[in-house]
Length: 310
Image 1 (cartoon, rainbow, N blue to C red):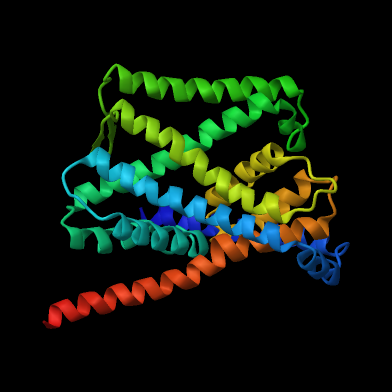
Image 2: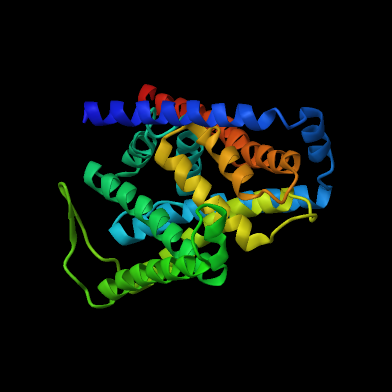
């Protein structure tokens, strides 16, 4: 485990270094004053829409935890507590990186105070991760079926390849739904036995994942100008690819990975406008939530300390 964790950390560092090197080459043709002008050009209306998209995304993330608790059954935990726990978990892990601090630490510290056992919390974490993965597969499949030429922005293949890949992804989702419908045997993941959820739970998963991803991508879409904008579905597809690469790289906040992917996939747009939109995304989706999460952690620990003293 130590060797594997170290390998992922090294991989994340390498990904950041490579991304920064590529960005350095890109920045030679980019004016930071022009990026500032692009930021200033974003209308108040679009800023409001981007904020609403952020709230939508984090609301869906809280729904991940709520769905997982409903699947596990038993304990009743308030929406407010779940929302704060989920918000803090994702705000910290998105910024610091899973290789440094795991969402498991935050969730265990919080949910153990509400009576959940270590095994239940472990199942909750696995379930939330799977809900995100399921949402990514489903959303990617839908985007590729509707916009199969999107794949040509990343690799030189016929658009038919994108359509076939999209259908394959949707087929995998259907297999999962079929397993739930037919009550197939549970999966065995190390010490955990993950059962297929009930169909109502699956239906919520199929809604929560795309809503979260769609909301996060909408932040970038609303921050981009209309000129040269390829449309929301294309932006969503590029976001799915870039965010997945960022998570796989374990780079804190996807440092450099998001920028490189978007700049490469949007050659028709002014790179200053693209970088300005990504700055808005980092501000609303990463930095502000990160700052707020620190206050939530401090307030929570202060409350727990007060209970121990009393």
